[in-house]
Each structure stands twice: as C-alpha cells, then as structure tokens.
Amino acid sequence: MSEDDHQRAERLIVANQVEGLSASDQEWLNRHLERCARCASRADSTEQALRSLRSVSVHVGPGLIRGTRLRVYARALELRERRTQMTMLWVSCALSWLLGALSAPFVWRAFAWLGERFRMPAIAWQLGFTLWWALPAVAVAVVLVMRRTQAERGNESLK
Amino acid sequence: MNSTAYLFVNSMEPETQALARGLRRRDPDLLDRLIEQYHYRLFRYLLYLTGSREAAEDFFQETWVRVIDRGHQYNGKFKFETWLFTIARNLVTDFQRRKKSLNALFDPDKGEPMPQLEAAHSPSPADLAAAHEESDRVAGALSRLSAAYREVLLLRFQEELSLEEIAAVVAAPLSTVKSRLYRGLSELREMLERGTA
Image (cartoon, rainbow over all chains, first blue to last red; front, side, top):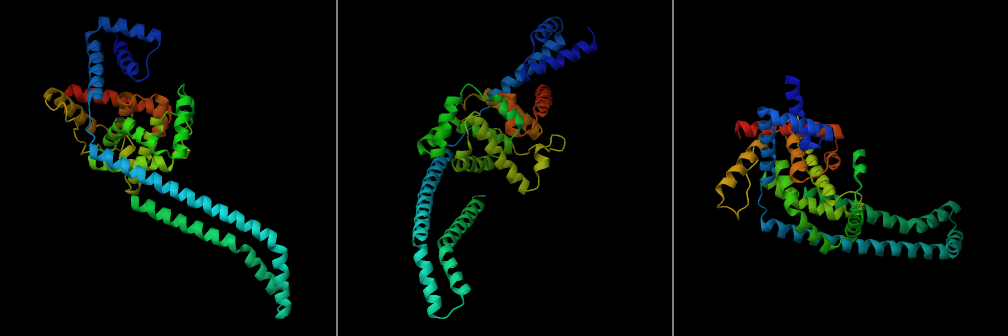
C-alpha cells in the first residue's frame, strides 16, 4: 500500500461523514480499511469524535423559556394593537381623502369667495386651498414618521 | 440569501407553508409551540456560537422576538429551523460587527478560539459522571476550535442540517462549507485523540 492510498483513505473517511461517498469510493474504502489497521483506527476515532459531539447536552433553564414566552406574547399583543391602530389610521385617511375629493369644488368656491371678499391675490387663496387639500396627507405622514422613530428607539433599547 | 438556499425546497413544503401563514398572523399559540419545539436546539446553537451562557440567553430571547417581528418574511420554502438559525446567527454577527470583532470571530484563519465556552450538561443525569466527563472533554475541544469550524460542525452533526441549508445559514458558498467541515472534523478528531481538551 502506498502513502497515496493512506491519504486517499484519510480523505474518504472524513468525506464519508461530511457528504457521503459514491458506491465505488465506499467499496474502495471498505477494502482498504479491512487491510490497514492504522486507517481503520482513524475511521474509528472519527466515528467516536462524532458520537461524542452528538452526545453533548446543554441545560436550558425553565426560567429562560418562561421569560421568552412572556416576552413573545407581549410583543405579539403589541404588534396586533399597532396593526389595529394602523388600520384605523388608513381608514381615516381614505375617508378623509374621499370627503376632500367630494367637497373640493365647494371648498374651491369658498376660498375664491374669501379671496375676493378680502381682496387677496389669487395665488394666496389658491395656496390656502392647496394646504387645506394636503393637510390630511401631511398629518398622516407626521404620524407615520413619529411611529417609525418610536419603533427604532424601541429596537435600539432592546439591543 | 445565498443562491444555494434555493436548492433545498423540500417535501415538507405544505407543512412549512402552514407555518408561514401562522407566522404572518402572529399566532401566539403557534409561537408557543415553536418555542417548545425548538428551544433546545436554538439555545445549544447559540451557546456554542457565542461561547457564553449569558450571551446565549440574551440572543435566545432576541431571536424569538425577531421571529415574531419578521414572521411575514418566512415564505415556507425552507425548513423553519434553517430560517431560525439564520436569524440567530445574524443577530450575533450584527452584535459582533458593532463590537468590531466579526472578522476575528468568523474567519477561520484569523479567528481566536472562544475562551469561555462552558461545559454545559443536563442536570437530570448528574449522576452519570462518565457522561459529564465526555461532555466536558468535547466542550473543551470545541472551545479550542475556530468559531467558523465549530459552527458548521454543530449545524451538520448536532442539528443535522444539509450542506445546502448550512450554506444558507452561514451565508457562504457550498464549497466553503465543505472545506470548513473537512478541516473542522479533522481538527476535532485530532484534539480528542490527543486528549488536549
């Protein structure tokens, strides 16, 4: 047996555990191990190392599991509540937009009348109308930014 | 996620799809069952990944909170444990990155062995002194192994993940995973043979 054979056997012993062997490699390895005590011993010690690795146990404290469950449950409730709030926010937003769209012609006339009544330049009352129109969207954007900032702070504090 | 991750769409898909739906709903009962089912494996992985019981406990809780936060991202294409281990590992690596020691942790060439890996054993078979001794011996050997090797060995031989799943968890090419497994297993065997642990 050449040194190359032993090196091949060594490689196949590990490969057998890591990813398995082809039938021909397995057959070659079995034949080699029958004839080579040194490589057979290496194969045994590899098996033994893996048995030992699999036998290692760890202790998980019941307090850790209980605490985790409570924390996860609280988080689930918090996220559900947040989801409900967000749904309400979007519904309000949609209603507000609908109302705004329906009332826009009347509000436009009201702004025009006010502009004429107080002798304002057209651009001033038109700007006022635009602000009125954009107000709900601005309010929602502010709420969303505030929520995001709060969430990021919450994440940071968890770290 | 690594492209190899897409290779292992498995036969458990209907089960994982149901799991994915439950996670999207943030079903607390489902989370409870998952904690019950996977707590041991997750904690064991974190313990050997961090080398510290205290850190493992912190990351354990954080991982489950992340599971509920990101549950909608689980698409059921992978086994749940693969996704769980990926979340846990990302939390640990993010933490280590913030501490600017990521390279030292996960580069097998630069990596320093974890000094404080404890020999952890179950309290119930405390009378089995021989088992404890073996447990200590392996824990000692693992603690001397590079973190990158230790991680893939644990995922392969304790968690019994496939090579493709391990590649997805550690975000490394399949060839790298195999190479780490080959070297890691050889080193572990030599350490145990020499009895240096």
